Length: 386
Image 1: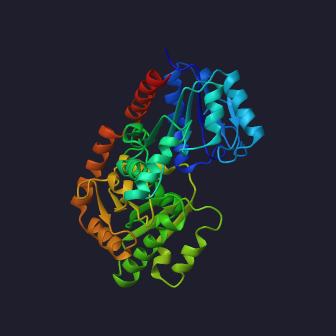
Image 2: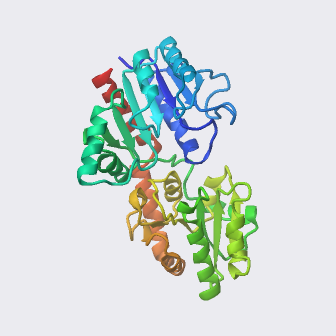
Image 3: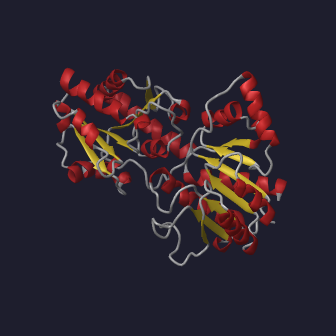
């Protein structure tokens, strides 16, 4: 027997975008396959200020608004009544912690299987007595999730060796990408040059994501300054997407007196990333703080872009170093500049990495396999706990 109903809920408003926006359709497909019908799938958001979720039909009404981080008597009762009324017996939450008052009301209302999917590390690593106390704390917590899913081995280790989650309650299911949308296509090689008015003859190095410090945009900007001002490269251009509002201003100030100012384009938040990839030479993720097995890394690799990534947690799992991409010391703009020059000057290396990147994603990280793995795991958990 499949689950009667599933609640897939998030710690953010509807239509947030970025990586979560890539996950939402996948989780919807997983939930529909798991229960056998979209009628049995329910969604939870902290608010609908972003509008009706854009990945579900306009008449989809199985939506509840509550904030998992802000339990109060009204919201706890709302969740209890909703689950009870809709006979929901499975809950799948995004980035949900070990303990939460909502778990108690979910269990009492009829939830038999509770799963937390994590898109980030759960904790820093711990040792000795501190780790032991963490494990004891988890063991003594009632109404906790039955299972935790992570995108990388490093993130799973953060749960087991940091937060104290038992290894048998943890699974790793890497991110995936629709390889039919993200693919190499020389016919669109001019797309980004036309859209952003970038001079031909420059090789495009691409980044897309948040602008916060830990994402390392400042490292990319400093590498650009090194390449343009010190090494006098004129054949390289940086295309940086994801900035909103005035987020690019502080980076533009960094290059106001640099030749790099004419070789960096901040393109904002866009929905044509798959087309833009087809014009690019390589991708960069120069994070300096924690990072995960990012969705953007898989999209770039699927599009045939070799990746230059920081040697951090799950991020280094996104490449086979030397075969599908190159790794750099976190925070080192000089190391990044060296790797950019290496790829720029060695066309054969770049092309071999491009082909290997695409093959690796098609074989291991395609969307169909990802959803199948999620459904298979959820089915096993339901047969065990349901």
